[in-house]
Image (cartoon, rainbow, N blue to C red):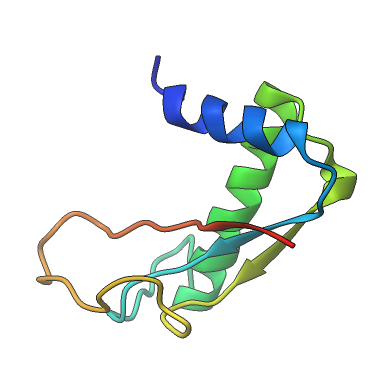
Length: 96
């Protein structure tokens, strides 16, 4: 199953009453494509995609989730990659 790890995360989220914030991040290389005009748009889109997946596929209540897009600021891991490497993806899930 492609979403096996995410299914476990969703199960854990569904067991707690806390609100959950989904954070999208990017690496430090600027992006400018027809779809994403900036790393800010890409990071926000990543967190929205995770919200959609958690709610539609795994039944996590949308009312419990919020999203944030941080681009390459507040980076959770090393900030750079070689120009031709696969795109870096990150969407930490936080509970308060």
